[in-house]
Length: 552
Image 1 (cartoon, rainbow, N blue to C red):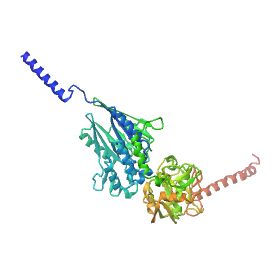
Image 2 (tube, rainbow, N blue to C red):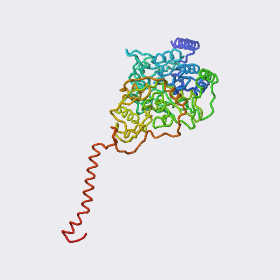
Image 3 (cartoon, rainbow, N blue to C red):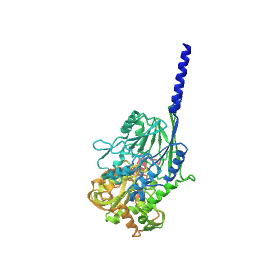
Image 4 (cartoon, rainbow, N blue to C red):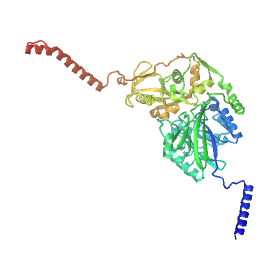
């Protein structure tokens, strides 16, 4: 019996060894251990400076047996001249050459219209993922998720984009689309990917870190959903040096404008997942570019050189258009841009949003390429007839988030106004004067020039949608370029069109500078009180003297 048992065991062991030899399976191995390196970038707005370095880093890792994914978290296809003139095609060509794995479209990726975005998605060698973008019947219009597999480990990746797209692109670009709850759709994606037996779940989101977000931000989505290992975010242009963790989910974001590359690492060992995030600052040292990608970028840019190299004006000083200035305060560049709207239309007043200005202009010659970089959104200039009351509401809305940076921060021409940041919401703006020195009258109708995006209520300027007799002109970049050709007087500093006060009396803008009724009553009461005190001080000593015969 024992002999027979050992013979059988020996035969069984021999068979097992033979099978293992043919199938390369180690039955004694533990769960697979892998490290996944993820390069990610966001909010490049048509820039390509980081692409040769991403490509080279990814290539070197892959040549050494590394597992690599490359992702973009939105606002990629629009913003710079080559991207704009090709309606995003140049960016897709570069991304294909680099070997991107997936992207989520940001609000500005809809700027050429959804039909164009669909065309670009079909030309891409990678999927555009957006689980919460649907048509009015509730059907998905883009892919929801993509599953990658490395050494037996399944990685599920889904996309969620911001519902702020409803107000942060022209409404015609997203006609027929709905942008549903990020949290609810993220939860549905986690459920679907777990059903697909995914070991790692990654969310590509264009939601952001802004506290002032109208709809949703990353924290909202994360706090509502369990099971997401890594979120690669965009929209708020936030630089998270080592990411941040919420509910066990690592959130990473790599700033903006191709200045940095995000790198996340996920290691799976014995069924345990560990993860980390870091930033590669391209200004910190010498990095080797992939020359193949450099050549692709140069070829795309060469296609539009004849247009962009034309000189349209000169400036003796820096024209300030950086995000941290135009989204918070008046600048000399913003003043010239709003002046150009009045020059193009003959309107009395011009209104522009700081978020529409995307770059500064250095002193010297100004080319059409620079103009298109500063004003990249191909906005149409319009005029509307608007009441003074609605103009005042627009000014209030335009400074409502001060001192926070916001794309809705207002830039103006044709008027000056004061505001008190600490005042009650809706009562921050005090004196409003037109260029002719007259006070803004609430009941009077004025001709206002702006861009169609704002006239239709974009950036939550709902009051501008009350305007009547909408008239269209050319593009804002064209208006700016034509104004520069007239050699306008360019100042080195802002002109004081917007004055900020810590404390100021409320001034009536009805056409007279008379104080408000409450203020008048208070002034009279104070005058009476002071008069009584003064009179008492004069008369009382005489009364005491008569009554007592003493002088005190």
